[in-house]
Image (cartoon, rainbow, N blue to C red; front, side):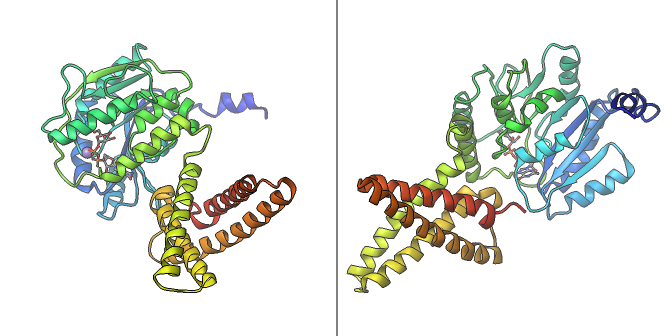
Length: 379
Ligand code: GDD
Ligand code: MN
């Protein structure tokens, strides 16, 4: 049987176009149990004439969200649950939701009822009419709004929106919206280039599209959260910075490596300060002081890398002890490689700083590569 036969026969009688799902609504969830049923009721009321489905992508919520979604799914096949274990992140959750569905149109919206589901049919109409490839539910075009946000949040959101234009040149009023709909092709063209960092999936999508999609913005008013809590915290700002950095320079220097190197540089400072304290304040002999400084610097490097560089794969509890032990081992070998390369470079070039840099570079690349695989390996 050749490929043609497969293509011709497989779909026959499997599904009729009348029942094929036209729109998949991807909803990332983290502890949103109380919002699931109201959201489904709202979506159902908003889309009476559309074959839709909702895919909840849950990062192992502990409040019973995934169990609740599956219970509803047993009654309604339009409801689905993708549950991820040991991973976090709104952007990657949306990406995996897209990969788990097949519909020609995809919407992304929050679970907490802050996005106005009544916009969904209008968005779909724009896409089906071929007037745009992507429709954004926008807070910042005439008719839209942010509800009663604190003046601080308004200011921060404004600043973040201006920063977004660094990586997305298109003239879009609300590139940080979490509410949008697009043709499937828009996602498919961008998925492999997307950074997946943090909260800003729309911006990531726009900045990663090889061809800028045609965009339309429709106004809506951001509503109050009714149940549960917002997951927006100060680390979201950090993750946003990582997304911007990745999209700005990620092709030249991987952001993770740059960060690892930066923390390594900081480790040198920690090392020297500890050495000085041990020698001058504690009066310890040089070899012992150097050993202490080495351990302190490696430990602080580990803690910082765990907190920042590998935040999305952060180790907790017993994993920290195991990870730290592996990290010591890797850095130990890295130090030997560093000294070996530097000594070799020095005998052949006699330029002390060049030899030093060569050794440090080889050591850091080794430490980074090995740590990425063994210390913070993906589960
Ligand atoms: N799967 C998964 N994993 N879902 C998550 C995660 C996560 O790590 N973090 C948050 N979510 C889900 C929440 O459960 C909710 O459904 C949605 O993502 C948005 O989270 P909120 O905590 O309600 O975010 P927000 O209201 O502060 O931010 C919204 O507005 C921003 C614009 O100001 C979001 O729509 C952002 O994307 C948007 O940029
Ligand atoms: Mn919210």
